[in-house]
Image (cartoon, rainbow over all chains, first blue to last red; front, side, top):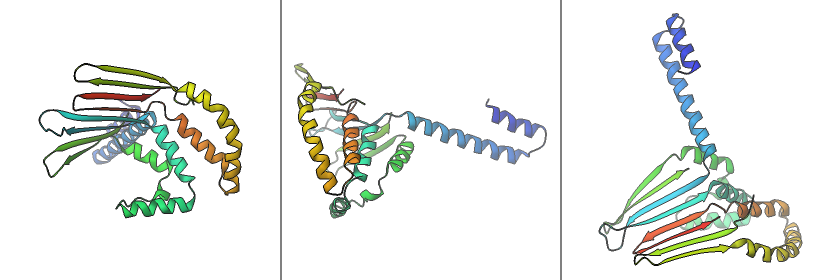
Length: 143
Length: 87
């Protein structure tokens, strides 16, 4: 039992806080612990991994599989490099992305945003199904 | 911070045939180094004349280059499997 949890229970035993207040304090403590462990995991993560499993063209049991590992340092370096792009190049890139239907603004991608993304990217799984009935699963996570 | 030194390629077919290749990239970097050293001042000068931050751009590219080790791509499908890795 952690020191803070013990202190809250002591306060409850002494009657200095009500049961409701103690419950709220414990919930807040757990939330802080979770955030702390998620931030630690994000700080320790070194790679972004993308795994794709899809039905092979012939269908059946054979599954095509792609496994990509990208160092997070590479992503951060790429984001830093993007911030050094001349404004006219960024405008052109944004326009090209918009043309393709991607509403992404290159100017808004910052290294701190990437850190936040990594912190929140615990394990994302996307199931994709095509009209022909083929299925694919995409998993994105940090490790 | 080191650039990728070796490119490792593994390939295997369904019939059991295998290919394992280690490409010593550090040899390539050693060959390229004199050219880089000669061309770098010129590139920096051009960047400065264009109004860019030459050292920041060079540092960003260097960071990108040295962050490459650890990258890997593995794919399997239709009787073939391959794995490409930068070390």
